[in-house]
Amino acid sequence: MRRLASLALAAALSAACTAQAPTRDTATAGTSAPTATPQAPASLQALLDAEMPTIPSKAGLWVKHLTTGEEAAYHADDVFNSASVIKIPVAVLALEMADAGTLNLKTRLTLRAEDVRGGSGVFRYHDAGLQPTLRDVLLQMIITSDNTATDLSIAQVGGVAKVNAWLQAHGYADGMKLVQTTGELFAKYSALTPADDRNAKTNGDHAYWLGELTPRATGRMLAAIEARTLPSKAGADELVRMLRAQQSGARRLPHFLPPDVAVGHKTGDFPPVLANDVGIVYAKSGPIVVSFFQNAITEPYGEAEDRMGRLTAKIVAYFDR
Image 1: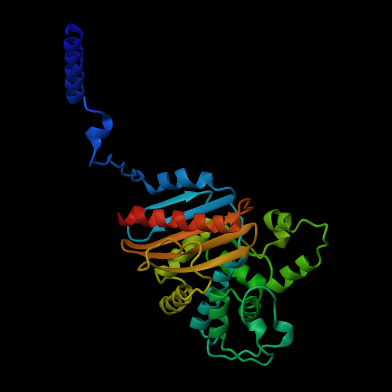
Image 2: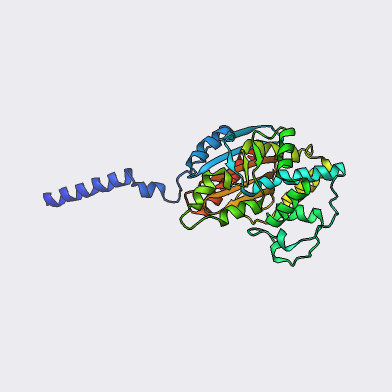
C-alpha cells in the first residue's frame, strides 16, 4: 500500500512539473518566429562595395541618380572592351550633324552587297538595293545592334578618326574611343586559326576590340543625353526614343525590375566572356544612369547577365524605398 501511495505521489509531481514547464513546441504552437528585415544599405556606394567584388569577371559600374545627384562607382575609370556600346557616341555624332544640317535623317542610303556585315542585326537578311533612311539606319544600330547599320553610320559621320576627334572635342577622349569598324574587327577574327585563343583576344588585346570605354565616361554621356544637353533637345529626344525601343530582350538591366519601370539602354555582347549594358532606368524616384561592364567572364553567361539585373533591381529599390 505504501508503495502504491509513493507511486501515486510521484505521478502527481511529474504531472505538475509538466504543466508548469511546457515544451518549446507547446509554447510556440500557432505562432511564427519573427522574420529578420533585410538591412537597407547605408549608401549607394556601400551597396556597390558589397555586391561588385562577388562578381567573377572584370567588372565595372558607375551609377548616378539624376534627380538626387547621388552617385557611386566601382572600377569606373578602368578601360573595358566596349563591344557594341561604342555605337552610342556614333549615334550622338550623327544626330548632332543632323542638327547642324550636314546630315539629313531622311536621306535614303542604298544597301550594297559589300556593305553587309555578319553578327547582330537585320539588314544582313535583306536584299541588296534596300533603301532605309539614315534615321532607320541609326535606329537599327541602337535597337538591334545591327553591324551593317553601324558601319554605314560610321561612314556617314566621316569615319573612325572623325568619331574620335569629336570625342576629344567634347571631353570624352579619356574614357571613350572607337578602335575600328565592325568590318575591320570581323576580318581580324576571321583570320584567327583554331590554335588561337579567341577569348583571350576579346579579353585583353585592344586590336580585337570595337571600342574602349570606361563606365564613368559612358555614364556621363548618358546623363547628358537624358538632360537633353547632348547633342541637342531634338537629337536627345530622338536617341532616348531609340534607347527605349531596345530589342535585346529582358535580360541584364531590365530583367528583375517591376513592369512599370522603363529602361532605355544599349547592350554589348561577345559571348561567352563579355556582357555590357548601359542605360537610363526610369524609376519612381527619378531617372538613374546605370553603366555596367563585364569583361573576362568566368561563370555561365546567363548567370553573368542575371547578376547585372539583380544588382540593378537593388539599386532601384535603394532609391525608391
